[in-house]
Structures are given as structure tokens and as C-alpha cells.
Amino acid sequence: MPIWTCWNHWIAVPGGDQAEIMRMLGLSRSLSLTFAEAQEMIDADEHDDSADAQPMSRVFVTPEVDGWTLIFGAWCDPYGTSRRDDVLDACVRLSARFGRAQAYYFGAQGDGSTWLVAEHGTVIRRYAATSEGDDHLLTIGAPLPQERAAWREQLGYADDWDPDIAGADEAEEWHVLAFDLAPDIAAALGLSPLALSDDTPTRGTGVLALTPAHTTTGWADTQRPG
Image (tube, rainbow, N blue to C red; front, side):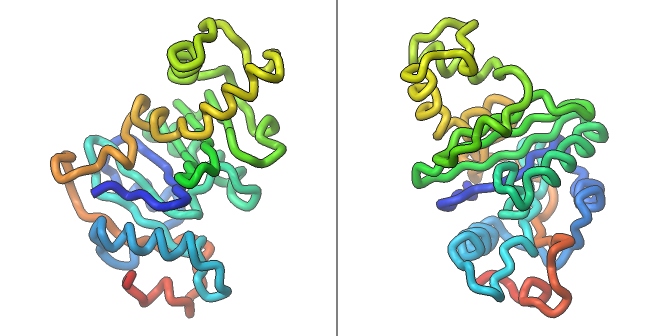
């Protein structure tokens, strides 16, 4: 089933070497988890800011789904100041090992998008379109072909249009369009969480994993979602 909440953060790695991906990220397996349980867990974490919720302490690691392994949870956030540098570093290391790695943020309530794409140990693109004022500070690399296609087909801009030197009106039009673009970028480059269904080829078992941020006495060690 699709995994989709109000605020979505995930890392995508090609292949199905769940154990190696978890080792590289410093994750420890806690228990097996279904997609329905994962959906409930992520949604609860994102909406609960109480002191004992610890949304950074656990993530859901999928089985291999259509040739990809996805890691979900706030800990995977490529945009927020608390995790952006670590997530960038993680994608660089994962891409050096697996050829590619990506990280995404998508706010399904109109809160914007961020995408981070690394290949063979190098970040080739990071871009943010949110309601925050420092989005431009996150930009790395040239626009992806998928970004150019979006502004060409939906806004009528030329392929070589440059958002960094565009006029204010055109730049704002692009910024608004890019707010909802993360799922499309993910689908074009590999797999979007929205595309998961009963027909998605799957191999293995999804797990709830504890991040290096978890506390040994917290509910993340013992409590199944729900």
C-alpha cells in the first residue's frame, strides 16, 4: 500500500540489500512491520510532538519494492536544519556503495518539496521549494531534466530557462509548481511511495528500525505501532 502522510520524508536506495543499507545508516532492527503498521507509525510520529514521541528515533525500512529499498521517517529529512547535513552525507555514502541514493521531503498539505539526488559518491542535485525563506541556500547542482520538463510543459518556459536569474514573477511561478514536485521527481528517477500497491513487486520483509537517535529506555524499543 502507499505510504503517505501530511509530512513525508524518505531515502531511496536501489536494490534490496536491506541489511547493508541499515548497517551503513547505523540502524538496528527492532521488529518486522507491515506497510499498514508503518503508515500508522509514521503518521503518529509526524503529528505527535510530545517529549516521549521521539520521531527521530525510528524509521520504517521497506523490503525490496520494485527494485528499491525505501527508508521512511522524520530522521530521513533532507530539508530540516537538524538533519539536512547528515542526510546529504548518508546519500553520498550510499550512492558510492550502490550507485545512486536519493532523499525527499514532501508536505502533502501544501508545505512544499525537497529533493536530493546523489550518484557514485557525488551530489548532483539538491533543491527545495517550501514556504521557508532560505530555500535558495540548499540549492546544489544544475536543474534535473525532470525539473526542466516540468517548467517547459506546465509553464511554457524554454529548456534553458534559469530560475536563478529569472524575473521575480517567473521565479515565483516555478517555486509554486515545485512545491508539489517531489513525488514526480521520485517516480521519474526510481520509485514514488504513491506508486506502491498490491501489484508492486516485493521481496523480503519490512522492519521498524531504531536510529542512532533512539534512547534505550524509550517506547521505540518496545512498542509496536497502534
